[in-house]
Image (cartoon, rainbow, N blue to C red; front, side, top):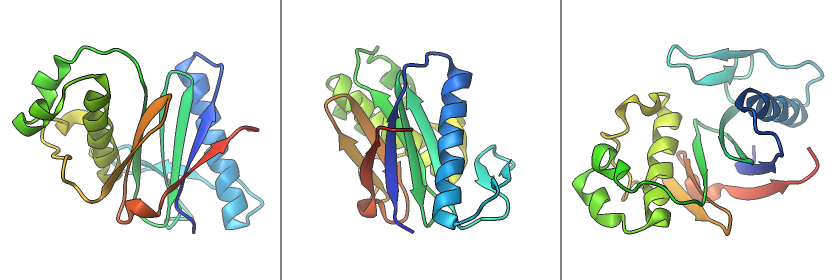
Length: 171
């Protein structure tokens, strides 16, 4: 399977509606890639990480920020996080970042560089954000970060360099 990150844009503001768009996309993509006619059954690990019960080798992860949705699909466990570039309170780093990461953060872009890497790592493992301060991410070779005009995105997998970004305009 080709490892990819699909970027979708939406005008929707409601988080539940955004999640529905994202999951509808994942289901449609899974049906196409797996060449199946029935919707795969979605379930969750005990940690809450979703997967398709009958297709454990189809790995995916979803993230959204404002009007952007990122859907990562991979041949192994994957985590993704996208953040729309914006102003943020850099003092958040004091609470959640290691000393090395705090030293790295100089502006909003460097903050979101670290933040998205942390989220992608914890989403890959299924741990969630409860241990975000413990995740060390600056030198982690399983994480790749993409910076575009509108967003910063990180993906964590066994082979992060294999991912390409695909802009999905017509979903």
